[in-house]
Image (cartoon, rainbow, N blue to C red; front, side, top):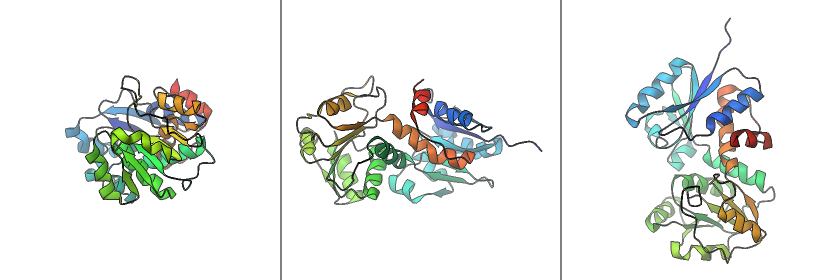
Length: 276
């Protein structure tokens, strides 16, 4: 009898920059699992056709990245509560009957990375300051709330987007004008940058860090560069800092386990493999 050769992959447009193939192929090799993980560039107009065809080609699931993370919700046959709450999916599981199950593991990846990088992190120590109100911020806010963070100070360059999140997620969120964003740091025991500011090729995150507490945990979802200016400045103040690469690595764990039947480990060996 022929051994199964399960396939998974990542769907986006563009897709050449994705580190997910390097991540999952490292795990496949490490655990001696037959299978493969491939990048797939898919146009929006073709998305549903592709998703319905993949299970017939031996695919057991897929990751979804920009710009398809919202669109897949209306295509999937079943969507988890957290994907509905976040309003996007990044992980798909294809059942044997061809149905598509959609989940979002971004928040799981964020919290797992935070706990690995800052093992003594206490969600109830004080307010969390969040920069940005995009898709990543939604996943992170949901995850922080589920961990028991009581107050989230949220600032975005365009205030209406932050206000929309407050309207959706309730009074736990306090919106702060972008020009006053630095003031959030005087109270915050956790600081999170969910924007692309500070990424290679993007402008820096120009928020004054004078009020940053030395006992704060500071994390940035940007991982190119690994040590952003925010993390560098926070480290100089004595803060515990957590880079963004681990969020990418940890968010891949639930999908890999469901697709290939083995729960993988996130460690230094994996980090080196993904960074190349």
